[in-house]
Length: 436
Image 1 (tube, rainbow, N blue to C red):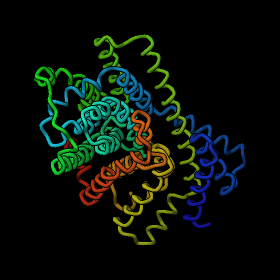
Image 2: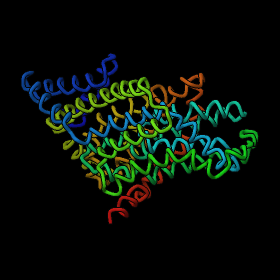
Image 3: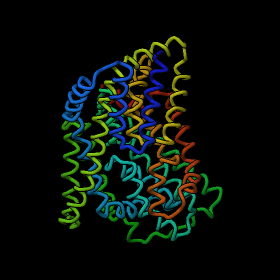
Image 4: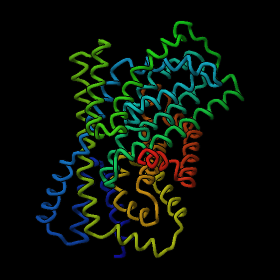
């Protein structure tokens, strides 16, 4: 069987197992074991030994310690008034700009993304505050929910990002460099969203009625006081990484400590709140780590079958230009985003696609940012768009309407990807600048 047919067979097997309703981590392990048995002829005892060795090695990876820490930090922040204070602090800043308080979705999501690392947490936390306020003030529902669906996905790109940590572990590249590389593309996408909102509302002022901000909220001291918790957490977490004082895993623990201190000083820390945040963080962390361990088994199985090398050779023989290759992968990932979540997309596709793009001359740091943006696009597409589900949950608007509202922001993100392909330094300039 030729390498492309083998890869397609393995991928079809994974989709079939997933379609059966099996949990993702079991589906990955099953696909790996069946592939080794069917294509390599390995006996069950040898497959079990390989799986045990790889899973134990993957579970003991120090870099993965950052994942549960960042998840717990997000859970703590989710249960405080930080999003409400963020809204109050941003409102006076954006009230004079065309689009008014609609920009709080974009700015609030960008700032909260820098302390949560999760797209769903960013969308839910910011959306629960801004959606009701914008609705009461008569803002356009389509722009309010569409901008939230787009901006909420920035939680995957703006550091610290759980997905970037997972990519860094699997691709064996510097997580700190990935974090730095995500800053400029994330801010660029946020700027595109803000510019679109301003242009739409300048053309049609009725989409965003004029707001009156109280003198008390507009005072500089009030603005700084409301924004201080978010900026403080950003400074503590990212500053400790970029200064070289802490690794990403250590910075995650520092972030949890800072979040607990904020909750305690603001008198929002209680035994029930702490227990609830721990339980939810534990559930999410177990899910993510189980997927990663079984994904490592699948990656090794694909390596045993020499699929990445053989596919790279086959694609090289086609003499595809780098741009055609990236365009094909972009379409591939958008299609995957219709059916799979971001973590599953990375762990299932990376062993096959990473050697190919590196052989084509692309930087693995750049490819990590490209891949995360592709996953962000999947957050806005039904039927498995997590941001759409989150927005439907707290707004009550049907998911198909939310998906339609998100289309302009989906297209803006596609435009950002195009710019990043044409000008790769958008992602690579800042890591190179800080490195030397």
